[in-house]
Length: 114
Length: 114
Picture 1 (cartoon, rainbow over the protein chains, first blue to last red):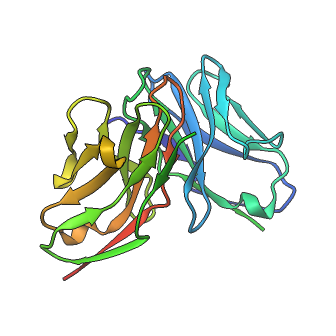
Picture 2 (cartoon, each protein chain N blue to C red; picture 1 turned 60 degrees about the vertical axis):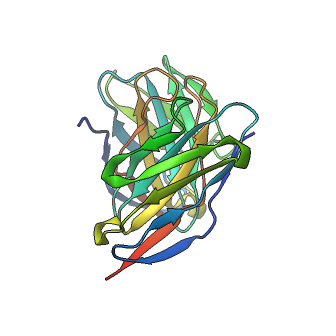
């Protein structure tokens, strides 16, 4: 089965530093997502991306966050100035095109902000 | 707005016993409903989904779920638990529009005793 791949699997950074989390969605997918899961809490939606622009975003996705699909294969999440509360597992996901179609998740990047 | 409530953050069953994980949803439009499983140190894997076809949905690994509109429920069941079923299970809802996000429940950790 095709996979969404995320790198790195673990990222440790100092508070205030910028981080970029990388994802390679499945090649024929058109919708891309970032979710996060703070330890012991719900999986939360951050942002969805379609046709090279953000289609939806949550309240969590403030000005410190941005997403980009720089080269047609990678899908990145950037946090400009990390805070302690950004520590979480970040999941990338992708989907073909139709509502209700299976959402494929990557195995996540564990971000630790010290 | 949509929401998902999973009753019981932890469920423990004996190997061979029935598994029942409860999920109730709230949605202002006909929902699409999903169950995802998360094994330790892995991403989210789709178990099954309901997208307005048959109300009894069969998924992978012997799991199934029944959509009951009158009860706004989508409980997950498996007739006989296996040790390998021990994981975190998440119920999620979307409103079915292309590109929209999933809203997850808080998750239920299933423990299987030998």
